[in-house]
Each structure stands twice: as C-alpha cells, then as structure tokens.
Length: 107
Image (cartoon, rainbow, N blue to C red; front, side, top):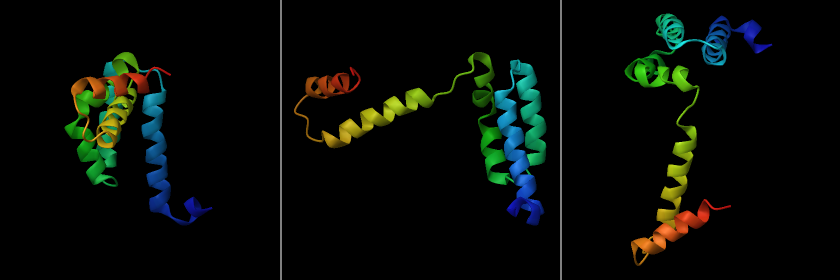
C-alpha cells in the first residue's frame, strides 16, 4: 500500500529487488560484474553512499560470483572469538584463551 503512495520508495524497493536478483541468478563472474556496474550507474541517484561503498569494494564483492560464498561464516567466527576475549579479560595465559575458544567451537 505504501509503495503505491510513494514513487521514490517504489523505485528504491525495486532497486533493492534488482540488486538481490543479481546475486540470486546464476551468473558468470563477467556477467555479474556487468549487471552490478549497470545497477550501480542507476543506484548512484538513490543510494549514493551505498553505491560508493560497493564501488570501493567492487572486486571483493564480485568475488562472490567465483564460488558463491560470502565471508559471513568467517565474520561470525571472528565475532565469537572477540566475545570470548572480552569475557575472558584477564586470562592468565594464552593456553587458557585457546582452550576456551576450542571448547566454544566443539559442539
């Protein structure tokens, strides 16, 4: 209902859907880069900062099309380790920290 009342919001929503479709469609690296560049040309008008961030990290973002994976799992592991570090402030030695990290990931 709100998309019918706001042209700007409708365009933004459609662009978000177009962006998602780029990554959900089985594309080669070259085709993915082409589609993403085309999307970025239009996105600069509505998502200036986001488009700039994507352009700055374009090569890394396009690496998704090589193996269809993201760094999400690794970032989750790093966040878990950082949490253990914060909780264990004052570990008496590295072995205690290491054992805590290993125990966390054994389940």
